[in-house]
Image 1: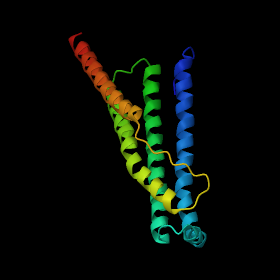
Image 2: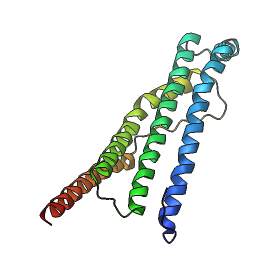
Image 3: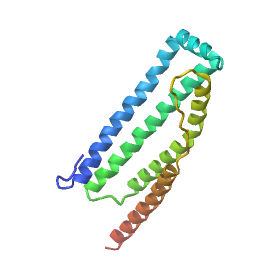
Image 4: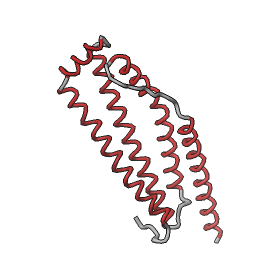
Length: 177
């Protein structure tokens, strides 16, 4: 983590990526940890579902566990997204950002952003299903597909091409000298 002391933006970006990596790791482990807890307390879960006259207990339990698994996978991908961003920040601080590796990192970040958007479909379906079949007071379900997230993926793919082209131009220039 060789950050130039005179560049507060890079330092702030690096600190934020480290904090976000820690947060996503904690959330992912927490979500996975809820699965055995939920399985251990199936009786309480079954009683709650039966009060709502909702779906069968097995279906609601499977939907809940699926939601936890998908949530853990999404937060694990978010961890990797911030990890890649941190590595790009490191190359910028070392005055060497136009590399094929950074182009690959940006491309992977684009795929992660796209997967986030696609994941909203099964997550939204599971949340709506559970919202209709599991009693919860003051539950508000807000489900939407974000065009901003889709735009982020497109921008990252374009930046990956720009970085790749810059790295190729640099290699050509170094080859002529």
